[in-house]
Image (tube, rainbow, N blue to C red; front, side):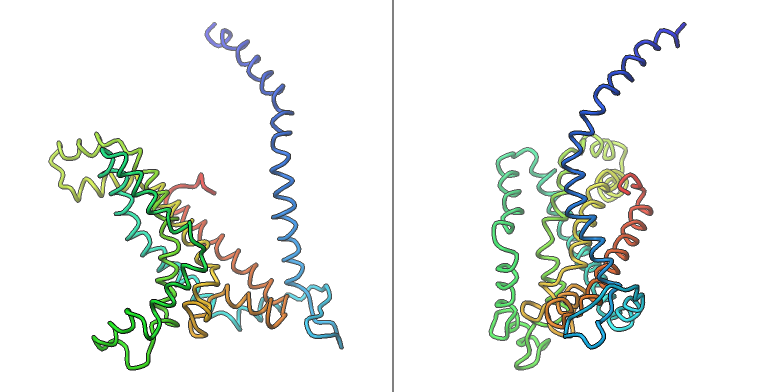
Length: 304
């Protein structure tokens, strides 16, 4: 009786879903067209380009379609160091952004919760760097890190840098630039999670005689995990392919070249399009594998 009582309602619900399904598909159509035009098509073009080979007797930068898998072996052997360096820099930048962004998000989302106006003002300050061009911000740091800048002067005074040496062009300046430019990507998702945190759970930890450190480790941090995971992904993925901070025109040098700068050089300078396309495919594949492992180990498979 109980099951039969629900049957008509379920049938009505199914019928309602079937009636709405063409509308839902119609609403999805613009998104599907957009993905096909601007994601699937360029990806296929990139994959085909990565398999091209030089035209025998052809001009510089002239290639024809082939199945040259050796392009992938060539880029891995030639640019393996830059590839590993990219993911190392991106991991360090994500770590530093987390160490800076989590306390900042905690302060804005929990400590300032009783002061909405001050909370909104601090949020604006976090977003404020986006009001200035990414290139201009990086160029500003290049001037600060220059030989005649205050940072190099201070490091020379305490003996870290020798006369005439600059902070620009070192691994420190590149990781610093990545961390600085991507801190909002780490802070905002964590803030969005902490801002909704039920403070009664934190107070319950204190009522049960747990120390603040234990309450943070067992209550606050697990509840903030979705924001930490989202912020890490939003920071690590673009930082891995960044080619501005590591460029010698900004904060890097030839000794700090990342995979993004190598791809840019192969496309625009060397006109080695198959190598650049193969590097791009390798970059995407490695990021997918690393993100998959990270999401799987962090217990948020729903993101996959």
